[in-house]
Length: 135
Ligand code: 5GP
Ligand code: ZN
Image (cartoon, rainbow, N blue to C red; front, top):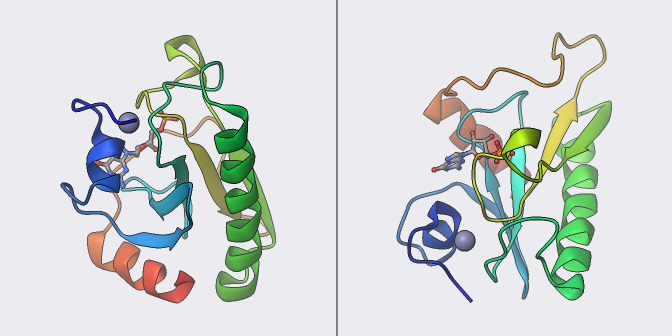
């Protein structure tokens, strides 16, 4: 169910802080600490699964549906013009946290983001304000 060494499991258990913006029976979504754009969130299954190859189908379905829900929210609340969903499976594909997650990356017409991006820590106050707008 959960992995004691996994940071996302700790966030799910409330043992590590996170700006949670959405949750349901199977999933939880929180702000990425190094956002690629304003409103970058991560959607994860509550049940630990290492990656796309290991996640159970019902958790995968619930996670993708939650990502769709968030895509609508970033359009409606933040005025995003588009959204990139991204999943990295394995270190060769740049996965760095080994608890399955889908990045929901809002895109704004003309924004400078080029994928893959170079993560840099975001401003905590700005992230908190954006999280509030998404809740
Ligand atoms: P990956 O590289 O595995 O696709 O994505 C991992 C993401 O998790 C990165 O975008 C990184 O910024 C984010 N991340 C890593 N550690 C934490 C953390 O402790 N809290 C939050 N909110 N995000 C994290
Ligand atoms: Zn985990």
